[in-house]
Amino acid sequence: MYQRRLVRLNCLGRMGLVGLLHRQCLTMRDSDADGSGAVTLANSDAEDVAKSGELVHDLWSKTLELAVGMYLLARQVGWVCVLPLLVVIAVSRAVEKITDNVAERQMDFTQATQERVSLTRAVLDAVKTVRMMGAVDRIHAKIRDARDREMGAYVRFYRLMVAFFVSCKFPLLSPFYLSS
Image 1 (spheres, rainbow, N blue to C red):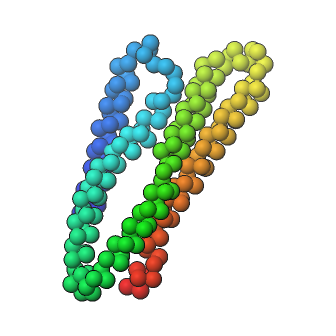
Image 2: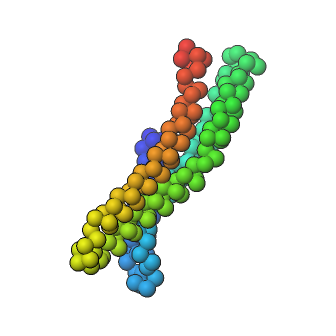
Image 3: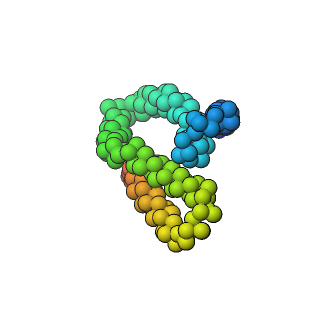
């Protein structure tokens, strides 16, 4: 039931944000638009904001879960109940070191995507001129280079995310967890 309500919260938040973004874009004057292609990324940004509701609910629920679990564990094993907490603290320090660059790499990836979308849009707007000038091969190479830069930023960002997820799952591989 809890998961169902979280999914519903995410869906409602995403729908509301996307609706607001699209309404804002439809009422915007042409002189206000810079042609950057940022509207293309509006849905993914709205999804990221909508998921923040899930994070807020996870914060209070996981804190409560930890308190009850520590209490029950302390009743069974005594002072040894702090060992899992120490493991969590150690892993969170490792995750913190990994995630120091996440925002920067995500921004690089988003910027590279926006540059590629803007370049492609500009070429499509002037496709007749490009063909008349005989610059199709050069423009094709520029778009390919922009896509290569975007994929390079994508790979750097997602390698960091893989390291993050592996470090988050590390406690689940501990002998204490596997023996239960």
